[in-house]
Length: 256
Image 1 (cartoon, rainbow, N blue to C red):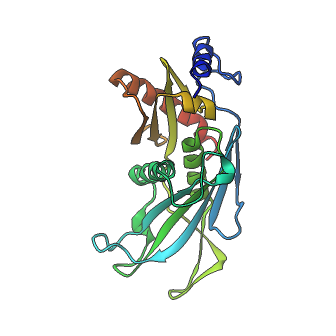
Image 2: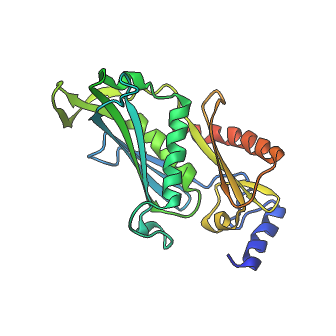
Image 3: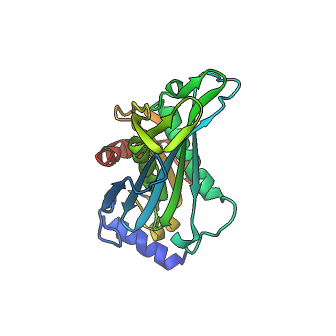
């Protein structure tokens, strides 16, 4: 990034403003839509400002892992579509999309929000796998929060397909929902200069030196942390970031 432009962003932050007029800890406008896919068991579209992502949930029958024969599983994939940013290229998943998928996966898994024992159909033989696919539609910063929010909303939107013990009828959904007892919410705090901000635009995100994604549940239980960026964070900064993330998660939780 151009050094003078980066300094311009930091100067604006020093006066308590963003280039788009927001306060440092304000999200852009958030819009949520569910049931957008006819082929997925659950789906959601989340827009945060100009950033837009889609998440779909497929419920598929697999074989349990040998060391956990009585539980189902969770799987997350993320695809950064070239149409959503000139920085994204087609081909195998890049480092950023792999990281995004892992952040979502870890937040859901470590929250213990999905009762994976209820996903077991026949011990050692059959289980349900909750497969979450995330696609970017437009990338203007903060894909992490948008994708994580879309994923948890898509899970809540999902309904199991009919299963007669032999075959799955994906054309017929039942009233059974994914056994989700907690809703992990990811909030990413960015460090830019001496400032801590949330929901950066693409330009702010590119200018930031470090970030910390904090995933919590409604009772403020800390599920997962993911550090990103080139510079280290002090212990005091991490504490501030976690406190801010816990506070901002309450705003995102209203959309779930």
